[in-house]
Image (spheres, rainbow, N blue to C red):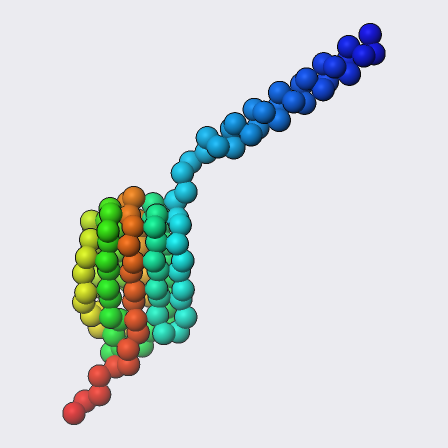
Length: 134
């Protein structure tokens, strides 16, 4: 009787281990594969897979500029740049490839939000100083 209990317990442990291994491979696919860097100079992200939202907050000064570059091989992204609780200074849906400059209208903390839809590519937001009056 004791051997039978040990055999059943061992069989149950093996069965549970096998089921756990099988279920571990059945999860959601990776939503982000790549790298992202943000510092006082800007925000850069390159990705083989982007299927979620990535955000960064930047303290910006009125008159400063953000040089924006988006390059996508597959999929597209939604982009939003703005201060919390205010209208965005830029918002675009289904973005694929673009290069443009955003001029910061007022000093504050701006959130850059990139939401990928099965996307592969890169984005950058490079901060440049305010243009001097001539």
